[in-house]
Image 1 (cartoon, one colour):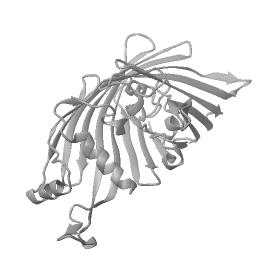
Image 2 (tube, one colour):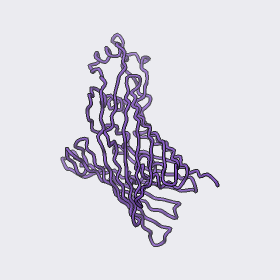
Image 3 (cartoon, rainbow, N blue to C red):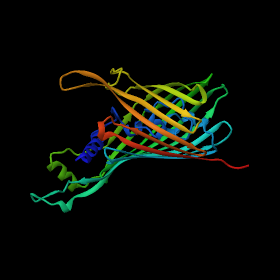
Image 4 (tube, rainbow, N blue to C red):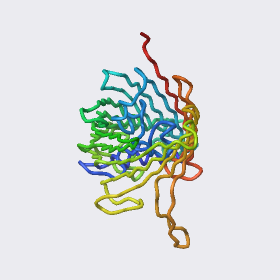
Length: 356
């Protein structure tokens, strides 16, 4: 039954939209990627320094230590019903600039289509077919150092494809921009997503028989339109410290998410702007072993007695750096759905350098 939730969610986002701004639009792009980042609660925009910067802060690509990096991540939500995958390739363009190409897929497969379950007043299970509701993002990234010491800039171009079986889909386009500034071992960053307002243009292709079945079941016919995603801005600050011995380090980072798409249940909430804090910490040993933790998604929750409490989402992670190979694992809860939403996130990153 939980699969039906994803179908309704996908169709509900798109049904009857005529250039409307929707809260949580393109929310699959806000889940996060990479075992390191997810283990730190997504609080990494100031210190991201590898190819996964394409997602968190493209300006961080200039900190890549390799000529070429390849990264993959797999993540499953809701007891494996929803699958979330990420892949990227980053490459050095010159001494001061880097580029990258990446993709994100979030989807639910094998959803039963019960539109024709009833035939002549009888249930006929042989008529059930399955389909997928899948969201894709294809991202091109560029980052460069500026003439100002410690100041780096970057940006993303995003092409979005959302598909709901054979019934309908959307194409979208958006831009991101980011800035990094490093001074005296302090790291500052600002990431602006969807800076020009990202759009999804929805269209539907349904047969007349499909429409009749929907109407007979008391449903409305979905229509095409334009779904808009308003800008989201994230700021971050971090600094790495040595503990007793230089081999032992601690890296705390603090981020603030600013959203403008309507009032949300976050720590600082209003109709104009919402502020959601995140904090993460990384303990390192000899740049080989890393332990991570984070806390994010603070919400006010009301229980059955009417008592309000502040609830958040913890995360844990571990990472190992083996020469050119990094292995990162995180235990997180991207949708804040209790035990059902817990997921095991595994990502790999390989660095390749030309000889000579």
